Length: 392
Image 1 (cartoon, rainbow, N blue to C red):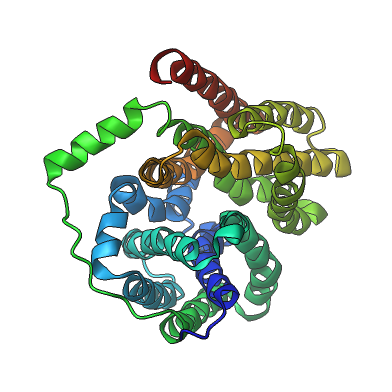
Image 2 (image 1 turned 120 degrees about the horizontal axis):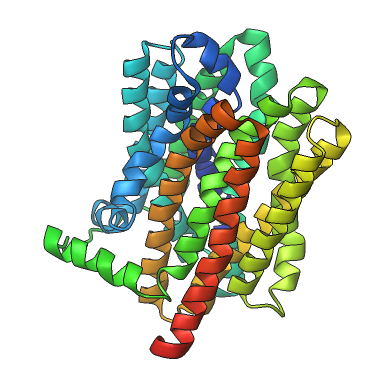
């Protein structure tokens, strides 16, 4: 295992992340079909099927790293992938709605374990000069997974039935469990003390009171509450011949802009300023989508620009962790906050957008994007002012 290339290990870990993101994507791209399987349920309930996976991360996001460190990263990844495979296979039967919701909630432990352990292993594996590139690659796992799931999963479901996508996901998770076990170095025993509940509560207070530790996470929440919900519900809303194209193209556009234009701009612009610019550009793209709604390609182009602007927010939010927090401990705690508030966004976004669409239609969609985007820009301004006046 010592002779295994770091690049191979990083790609395997990134591949495991794609499987974790597909735990959301496999429901999102089949959203309208899932609604048919559970015809008696409302759109908000169907949205909960997508987002309930994030409940575990919402509760344990900032503390999961301690437990993973105690158990061992490779061990946690293998078991998380195996559990994800079993749960996905069970979901392929489309059990009664309460059972499906319970399976999805348990799946949240698998998801959180992967997204906590994999990036730590990537950071440890990558040579120092390539750590930035490796972590940027990791930051794309959600968007890449959604694009691949839409590209491969939709034709698979149409050809062999909706359950085939879940079985394919189960097989994928099983394969990567084997790859992790084969190629990652064995875990060494860790004796990291796990803090008491009072210390955990105090830790949360310290993180969210600090404008350095909390700023990236607060902005990231305003991004995640919209992103997964849009990937889930915007393509079916547009419908027609553009639906499949948008479902695949939106995440690809956000990745491309984040890795190209976003990385280039970060040479001269502080990361939190790029987050703000991305949010404000998102507002303009949303207004264009609202104006051109129902007009075919103009609406489609507006949706792609919207995805591109959110891609800027995504990449710059991760870059802000290191720029705002110079110490390793500060970066670790800021990353934990991003995991927690990111899960809050992914958990609440889809049901909320489903409710707004049901009540307000495209107006509800526009407000759902514009209000969090303005909030994200404002939060970063406030936190920057706090850093300058009280904490520098």
